[in-house]
Amino acid sequence: MSARFFDGFTDERIDVGDAELRVRHGGSGPAVLLLHGHPRTGATWHRVAPQLVAAGHTVICPDLRGYGASSKPATTADHAPYSKRAMAADMCALVRKLGHERVLVAGHDRGSYVAFRMALDAPDLVERLAVLDSVPISEALDRCDTRFATAWWHWFFFAQPDTPERVILADPDAWYRGSAEAMGDEAFADYRRAIHDPATVRAMLEDYRAGLGIDRRHEDADRAAGNRLRCPLLVLWSSHDDMEYLYGDPLSVWRPWATDVTGGPITSGHHMAEEAPDQLAAALGDFFGAHP
Image 1 (cartoon, rainbow, N blue to C red):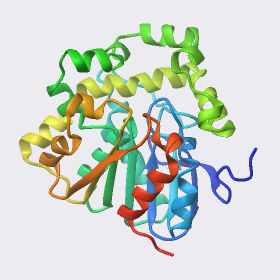
Image 2 (cartoon, rainbow, N blue to C red):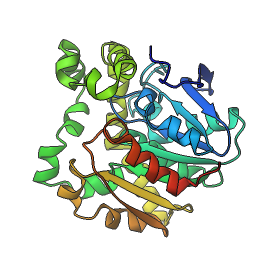
Image 3 (cartoon, rainbow, N blue to C red):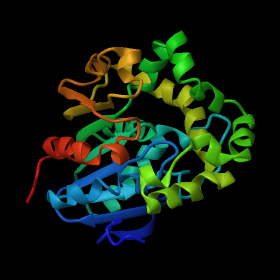
Image 4 (cartoon, helix red, strand yellow):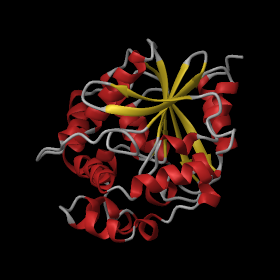
């Protein structure tokens, strides 16, 4: 393995109560929590995390519950064990177990929903929030039209019982189409172990099943109650992905949820931490602040 892959980071399993998480963490200074998307693991951040450490941060890169090498709690009929509220509670417990009273959080794709829920449910813990390639689940579903259903049809396919698992596991490499060239050898190996594990595939799909039901209900309840983010929000999106096609200006979708919203595009495809790590690390570093 390359000496540069999470060089100086501790790689361990941490019990957070309802789940046991595989976590890489390193550095010193104000804590930054980086949350990956589907079907990645915490390894997706391996080109970004060292740059944030160099900027003076402690950086924490877990595998979300159900993903990668983290545990896969049993699900329920309402998929609550894979709700973003449950996954956010894992992250809050993790941050506190690592000794931090405040944390800066960035989440990509599905991880952005965990990060968003964390900031809503634990506002005294989350100091700043960055969301990458997403709008709130409720906002996406409220705007669902032919364009959305065509581009993001997988949301609805993944919500079906049993069939998605059978289709994906018939040929995970063909389904997900990751590559060592794009991801780096170590991150690609981590990802391949995940997508070839039937328990991980089922758990990742549970994340989506929760999204269309219990997660949307939680967001709708927040909106009805007037709950908004109390921390500054940075919204970044990939210039070569679907955000602008679907929403025009993604910032406009987020503004009802926060009073302090900034952001813009990253010149990249969807997996920006792998494709444009320097630009992403610079944007996060500016937002989170350097602490040399």
